[in-house]
Length: 345
Image 1 (cartoon, rainbow, N blue to C red):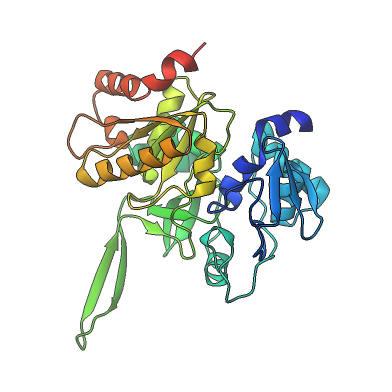
Image 2 (cartoon, one colour):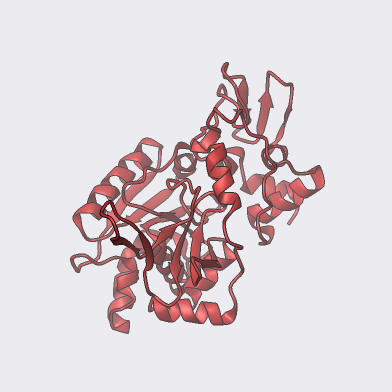
């Protein structure tokens, strides 16, 4: 892919949605890195150019990425092309360019969270055996974990001594693990009563230092005109499986919120403007409340949005794949019909 084509596909607001999820690009805003008390930063030319009026730094989206991650110009170009769809690899770890320790960094980050993330277990690419095991565990076609891995939203790791699958954001600042054997994580700790031990049982474990509101998936890639928003790691994999099964991988982007109480951060929200979104909610009261909240956010950001709910009470998108094959096919066709007419050629 040529660099100019990549620039047409990936703008500064789309990059910022992953790198600085609580920062919103504007013609007059605070810089996304370091301290700025005077709104000395500008993004202009339809999100293609930027300038820091205080330091005199300026450039295009490639320069923005290189400055944000502390990359050389050559590495910045290579990484930018990959993020625009020209390839896939492990994201480079950003160099430290943080504010003072007492000041939270952009995107709700902090020095304490950075230190905790530095202690994360190694995140590994999936083997064929891993993909098969996850697909079997979640009752999904193998294309679910396969496409999630291709987009960088799924990795493997040893978490608390257990082989686990991990869904994570493209910026690697939010990650949630589940055991590959399907068992919960059990944390034992001393209670307030002498000599007694309590247990905390977690079906999913958010890795320390995560910024929980950052979504996972390839939603930030604005080449895809449609966005399917789901809740939780299993539904992220199910969403990738669904768009693959329906032939929509080139039209529907996946956005996964890792908790019903999370709000879509401003940077991520900006990528919904002028796009068609559908929220595939959990069929319970918490899911309904979350879907209504996310829909209001997307609507206010200039996106078109509606909500689809599974027929069975308490069900979610992953549960659809537990149905008999014909019922699964019918439910998926209904859930993704918002993209079918305009998304297929």
